Structure formats: C-alpha cells, structure tokens
Image (tube, rainbow, N blue to C red; front, side):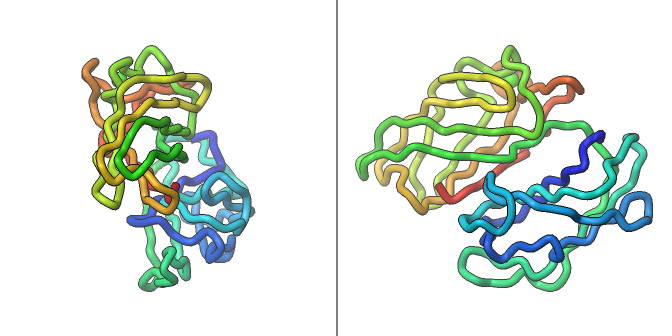
Length: 209
Ligand SMILES: [Ca+2]
C-alpha cells in the first residue's frame, strides 16, 4: 500500500537474465496497471544472477487496503533453464506488511565455520523487535548444511546482519540459502515502520549466494 512495487515470490530461485517487464501483467481494481521496471537479486533489469523474488514496479500504487490487484508472470525460467509452466497468477489486496526482499552471505570452509548473513526488507525494521538471540529467522542451505543464526551483528534501516555458524559442508558460492520468518523468543517476528505491521510468519527468501 502506498508503494508501486510488487514483490513477486517464486518457489525456487529464477534466472534474472530470463526476466523482462513484458513477463508481467498487473491489474489494479480491474484496470491495467503498466509494468515499468523490475529488480532481480538487488539489481535493476536482467543483470544476471538468480533470486526467488523479483520486485516489479508498476505505474500506479494502491492507496487503500481495499484496493484489489492481480499479477501474472509468464516465460520466466529457473536457473536450470526450465520455463515456468504457463501463466502463473496471484490476486490479493494491498497490504502494508513487511517482507524479506534480499539475502547475501559470506562463505565458510568445507568443515563449516562462522560468517554473516545479511537480510534486507521491503520497509524499515523496528530494531527493538529483532530478537538479540537471532530467533526471528531460521536459515537453511540447499546442500544440507546446518546454518544456525547466533546473534545480531547490526540492525539499521531496512537491513539486519546476523552472525551464523555453519555445520559440516559449509556455505559455498552457488549454495541456495533461504531465510524464513518465525516468532522469536519475544513471541513476534520483525516489526516495520512507518506502518507498524509485523512480517508474516513463514515469509521467506532464498538466494544463490
Ligand atoms: Ca521478534
């Protein structure tokens, strides 16, 4: 709400170079809302890399939570060149909830070790809602490595940096690392401002690191 950017989530990382503005069709309250730009894996346009989320910019932002939208995606490929099956559509109403929009990680050795994972969000984070014991998120590595968030390194603006410890297998370039929101030990997720709406439990973001 109040934003003209849709965060499109796929069930696996997609290839950014396969994405074009013409891959998306958006309606707002039944009328066409032109797609003007997109951002994949933190970069504008089809700049390469891969991401499970794409930010799609439209001409007109919804102004009320009762505004209805529909977004369709077609001919986007995953990182192995598999094209999504047909046109995939989602509908909903404008919401001010905060969502994960980016993830980057440092790497470890094969035996595991420590590093940092940086999460970025669609809105500014209320840092007092971020559990100091790093329990607001779980993190998985697609190669089966256990990744445990230990503590918060920093929280500022729309970014949280966590310290992690990885098990045997380590975190390597090319791994798909996914963070998922849960209720931390303070019994809530991460709050945002100015809207004051918490991130939904289960909101997740996966990226090839
Ligand atoms: Ca929390």
